[in-house]
Image 1 (tube, helix red, strand yellow):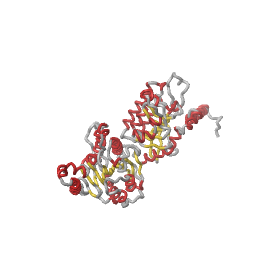
Image 2 (cartoon, rainbow, N blue to C red):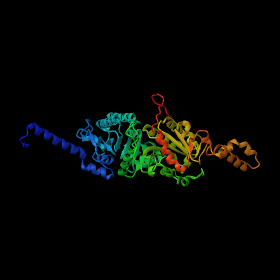
Image 3 (tube, rainbow, N blue to C red):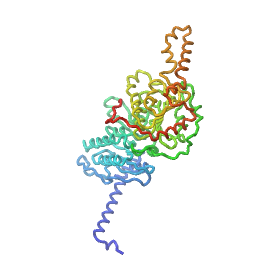
Image 4 (cartoon, one colour):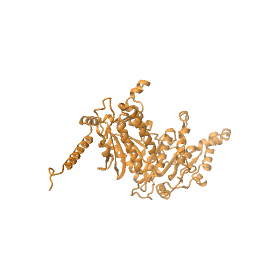
Length: 527
């Protein structure tokens, strides 16, 4: 048997170099120092590798360019050339499906982006696009690396260009786990979903110091761009959580509802919830009186598999609900008016929220179910001056442009332009249903009677009694539950208790739907 001492010199040299490689890798995996790691932990934040470990299936991560270092000189960088250059890139699996990931390492240069750092991100983004697999970015960086000047800015430009090229091709998810300031904030804004963690993550173009200097306003980082601000006020964040562990668990859940790319369908699962399960409780959940509010969440819980759904933008524009759920194991996007908030009217923010969700569903082959209970668009000077026409047109454009299976159900009222915009048959819904409690009209009966019979009411001996009579007549002739069905604008009036069964059968029929848009470079949607 040959011993190490008897081995040829070349073999010993090879073994020595392999051992050196292992030592270098250990240093790269360990990070810059225990002190830097302790500082990260003191902020309540995990390290980049810990985050990747939570996101991906155990043992599935394959790292790319672990030994990459920057080439910059001057400004104190010569003697500081840590491995990875502050970003960890690679791929692994989530629920057994390939996912690409990059994670800023705040312990190295504060996660700031330089030329080598950017090149690593560019490479992993290109790999994700080529492989047709989702890309998740774990953001915890201080922006552009000042010492590298314009090279760092150009690096961001390359990221933005790839974000745009990947849009609608592969799912892109940004997870904000630290600060994100200046131009760096535009990359998450270009992606499909943004997750944030309270207290530790912030996003803003100009920080509190600049705001104070320019406007005199005093505000904290979280007050300016924290998770709650972007989840409730700006609409930048789709999801906000209290801790990183929960946040990354929810990222995994979202990925389980999305396809790998725009050429595939979302992954189905076997459902134990009977497709023909009746929903008699719906009679109690939805009042017949169109003026009484109720919680649309409870309706969604009743009709989807096991009452389980993932709401997107839960805390922003609450008068409309956008959610991903399953019907008989198949992923579906749900858009629904929320009568318990602003009576479910459409306004500027609700229109933007729903339009973006429709576009996402259409891009990734997710059928759309729309639940209508809408009294119209929100009136008011601020809405008109804010561009409700332009913003409402975004939702109209998104629906008209969508080629995925589309089913709409009118639960109660559907008035005016809001009825048309919310995926009516006239703008291309494949199937439209209504409950017996539906009222589809240009406007409510009271308003319609005041317009149509204004002179008759004014001349009556008892105007109030005459108005009540005209309202009753208008409802009987133009707003009865079967008026739209008689004219073919509703495919059927259905028993509310059978809503789940009707949807599942209809979605199954539409699963092979194929529709092409006219040949064009791209549309020009309202902005």
